[in-house]
Amino acid sequence: MANLIKTKRGLNIPVNGRPIEIIGTSTLPKEFALIPDNYHGITPKLLVKEGDEVKAGTPVFYEKQFPGMNFVSPVSGKIKAVNRGERRKIMSIIIESDEKMTYQEFDKPDLTRLTPAEIINLLQQVGLWVCIKQRPYDVIANPTTTPKAIFISTFDTAPLAPNNDFVMSGQMADFQTGIDALAKIATVQLGVRYGKKAPFSTVKNAVITEYDGPHPVGNVGIQINHVSPVNKGEIVWTANPQDVLFIGRFFNKGIVDFSRLIALTGPCVKSPQYYHTIVGANIENLVQGKIKSCVSHRFISGNVLTGIKVAGNGFLDPYATQITVLEEGNNTHELLGWGMPRFRKFSVSRTYFTALFETKLLRKLFGNMKYKWDTRLMGGKRAIIMSGEYDKVLPMDIYPEFLFKAMIAGNIDKMEALGAYEIAPEDVALCEFVCTSKLPLQQIVRNSLDIMKKELE
Image (cartoon, rainbow, N blue to C red; front, side, top):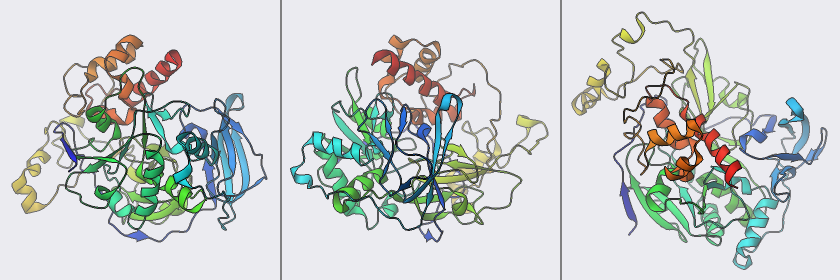
């Protein structure tokens, strides 16, 4: 029987536009992109030039620190452009698809005969090492280190997140192979949703732990904190379920297949549902004709708490499993501002009248309340307020206010003592959402982790 961990701290944000479990039809775009900044902390060294022909799986650039760590093309076609910024920094590599999907062929590996070192080298060579991140620092894992465990959360509790039970339907054989490969390197800790009996509860070669509670219990960082906290000198690797699929497909088929199921979600989507796409795709074809008419939209590659803002013809973040569309709200003007009764606004502190409709009786009579969401900050930045509000939504055994103050001050010793080794920006997204001071906590954490990595490694 799997272990059960329950958390009470957290917050489920009721955003409208949850995807229904239907796979819609959409044509693949003509352009795809590799954006080095999406792989935080790497220094790319280019292997191709404009006009070169590539296959799906052909190396496009590699990481300077680890020359064997390749980043490969998700599709076959030709290099249309290499866009550079200041000091010739590589901003993006645009690939024009030939729509044939010709794969770079590799010898199909025999997983049973490979050593951990050989698996690591192979994943770097074929471009799949990007699927594995590490704590501390929340960056692509250092292939020369040995983790004490590999954590995979099979469910996502973020607003409007896709249902991985549906996404994995018919693909569990590849997922199991991916788990088998990772299990040869270190113990795999698999987090599953409490009460869900299939398909993940039957996975082999993994230690299964059930979790119950509000968001962010689905975050891998929360699960690490409860099962195996990261102390100084220790390393834990992490991976997303759909990224584990990529690894499994490679060992089963001998090709690098970055196709995935992505959810188009949000209040501005006419019919939120799932679509087949490929990592790095231009999202224009995916969203065209599927968005409600509003004054202006914001397209987010990811969820509303941690996603990346992209243009309507921008490119999909390689780690994103959903696209969320909201109103910008920049043309909204409210009389008296915060003093209005706000009948369609969500309040964490239950200040507005909408809190009345969150009672069990009224929800049973009238259904769930539909809130009006947009991207406005709704307040001004000010000094950090020590109110305990972060503790209510962060189910980790740390003192978040003190940790954030140490990060703002740049005190590495205190950061180490207060739990910075196991935290990542996504873990503090809810803290940022409820923050009275409107502090950019995710950016503060990201900058502090970069400073720690530079000073301590």
